[in-house]
Image (cartoon, rainbow, N blue to C red):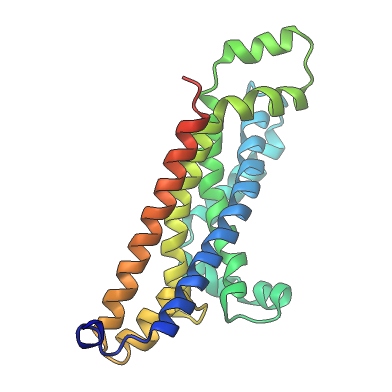
Length: 222
């Protein structure tokens, strides 16, 4: 029955492509979460009136964030090809997509982190200062815990964007469902492959959204 509906779909190829997409998305989400929080914290604490106000550092970090947010992802992959080849040793395959995925998404998430930190009640921060808490203590004991539900919501949105990025990366040989849909679907005019790949991408998006929503609700103390 399924073979009649989707005669060109090979289950083995589909399973392998799905694994590659989940692998690329999962690793890049972890990397983006770490680097995005670092960028967001630097933007927050070095801004005017911040815990560690420093205009020079703020300008450098903000410029980095703004520049890499402005570059379309497909161009960023090509731009980072020499760097990717140096780090990974190849410009093809799932691992080769990771540097561009993380560098492309971290600035986007970094801005979301900055916004989440700005939403933390300033009274709580002032109370911690009044008790003689160090900057590091305020960051790890006040800012991050208080903003964690928003941080999780932000990384969920970013994860969904990363699923789309992996599909674009697949077009230039990174593997995954994007690669399957383009090389073995569109280029061969086998639109059943394109359709099934699209459905699986949507299901992966729903999976990440569900995980993010559940985690955010559990962390929300309100």
